[in-house]
Length: 530
Image (cartoon, rainbow, N blue to C red; front, side, top):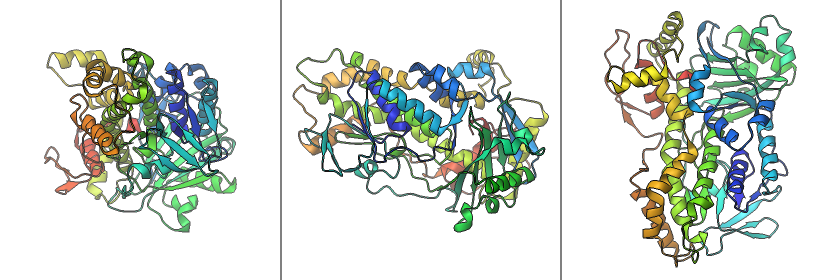
């Protein structure tokens, strides 16, 4: 049973059906409609999974491929630089960067879920779960009880399943406890094209993205696929009723953004509002026969490019761990249920560090774009670095990857930070992680630590202790306990006369920002992840 019918839940359903399992998706709403009108960026690591599922042709129909990302000053519109999505670079990731809408992608995944033979039930609100039972089940508001071998929580950060895993999970603000919010607006393209000052935002042949970088505020804008809208995400420090007034929020922005806010108001454009109250990655994702995935396990800030990508990765890894070929050697006298605690523990050990690392990056990107609470010197270093790269006519991926690798092997140079990011974030191979676990650790672990007579019900304490033992004893996938809000000590820096005063310690978001700004005289290489 998969609890939640968002992109996370549907992706897990598709992956598990492809592995041959019977799947039922239970969604509490009559139909998914949350944020359906918002723009959506498909990162390469998400794109390649969907293509592996045979959805490449459908993706091309509902999405567009941007050629460039332009970075501008939020305050005055000054051009700060650009990034070209080089096809040779993306080839290394085995995926593409594409733009679409949430509704288009959700509809595609829903149709594929049904096509794969999964059952999707809308309007089925769950009131309780039985996770530590020999017969796991969920009880619906109607009184119906539905049983399954495995319960998968894909109902988001505010869903029921996250509370079963960690009732004490508490949110925190990650920018010096300042209130930062995100607003997403969809603005009709025709209204933009008709305005000479804004027409540059809509280029049918390029499908450019635009990033406005500022102080306390920032914005991301892009046209999307076959949609009739231009999508705008705005981050800022506002509160109260005025926080939902886009014209008020963009009051100090450059003229193009001001015009976009007026058009949005005049055309009654769709506007969604979400406070950036961020929660850390859960330390535990498993409770008996329940495992949480997606935003329920590792929530990201609203509008993050990796939000749904990580969720789809979760489904792909989980399905590969439970793939028949992975379990074909098991004793015929022992059902699959006997291996569930081991596999779920492995799932968390494989995914935890990846999700925690990406979460820190995503938080750091927003911090870099807005620089809340930062000194003028810090903001100047950021902007000067971007202008230096712009004036050098250097692209973020200007060097040849193969040459860099060869030189690295010869000890002559190091691979650029941009390539490291491409490899770690966009180049991640989700299913290979699961295959590696089975090949190097899983089969041995199950054969030596799981006896055919052990059922998942058994003694609740034994099951939980056993799962925890597996998580902490896996030498190949150490489960770091560092949460994204843990304190890091900043290294001293003295490579520039314009160096700023660091605090002794800061949150990981600030640490990432300082590290990226000070990493080279050419400026930060993180913006391509925006």
